[in-house]
Amino acid sequence: MLYRYSVNLTPPPADPVVKQGHVYSEFVLDLPPAWQAQAHAGDNTVAFHEPAADAALIVSVDFIESGATDLQALAAEVIARRLAALPAATPGLWQTLQQQVRPHRSGAGLELSFAAELPGEQVALYLGYATPRKLLHFLMLCGPDRAAAVALFNATVPQFQPRLP
Image (cartoon, rainbow, N blue to C red):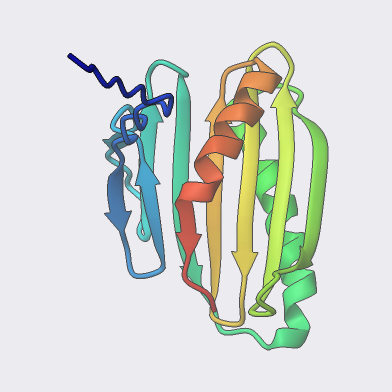
């Protein structure tokens, strides 16, 4: 009697990560089910909360009429206003860790970003886009652990697909 054995050393495929697709006219956002949609009073704004990470995500769009020559100044003003709004939402001495405005790789506008923290309380991470027709904002607010906040932001941003311009 002859027996033949076959061993498969390839690991089984990992279970796919379940995500909930949120499709809007200006962006698509795929989030794990842990991110719960929240009611938000603002127009053109959606908000989510992730209880385990105690993180909030707010995505909003402001429609504008601006010439391409105004975008750089507009982008700087958007960052300044967003940073100024943080103490109004959570009082304290917020520190800006990083801010940047650069051309978007598609050439459709500018990419804006900043990181700020209220030491020992909260971290704010922002990604935005300025085009001649809109400002698109992606703001994540997390607890005081800067490394955890950055890791969550970096894991979430690739799931955000803005529609530019």
